[in-house]
Length: 113
Length: 115
Image 1: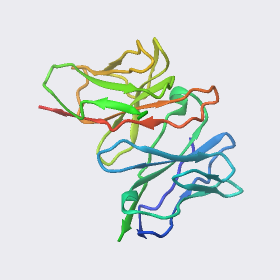
Image 2: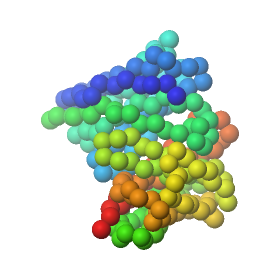
Image 3: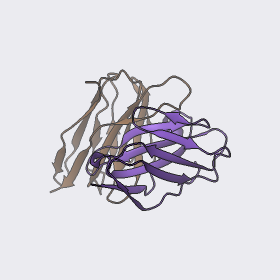
């Protein structure tokens, strides 16, 4: 699976959009981009995923560049409850162990009042 | 509500003891997974199951065992052979539509410590 690079930490003001970048320059054609977040002492929460088109759901938007070498997760109106570590994961669409989720260090997002 | 339930939230193991962690899901998902998370680190796959009565070893299966007798249940036993069991254990499940890109959804974990 391709390696991802994320900033270690970011701050965002409450009510503003949070834009979390992820670089995955070695991504291959059959690899999807997934975003999860983890609040301390809880299990990871799935946010969104995509292959090459931009995606939006009730939680966030995912913008993938045309060359697919980077992506941005957008939380449109950040709240204090969005404070968490956000993980960008790239993996092939295989089942079982071949589709294992490999979490890196992630970005610690702090939403401030 | 639909989701994944792990129990207990905290568990303590004595030396030489086997302990079993429970994972139940009511999402009607075919695939289930067990991960281990150590402090400040990512997740490592222990076992996974794509269908009832079948399961496969992950990257760190030694010292662990699982069963999948029912679609909704995937218990993990940490045996006495696991010499460093202190960790945060996470169970996940996903739909299996055959294309493999369905996201995994996680429970809230069980924190296991050694007495």
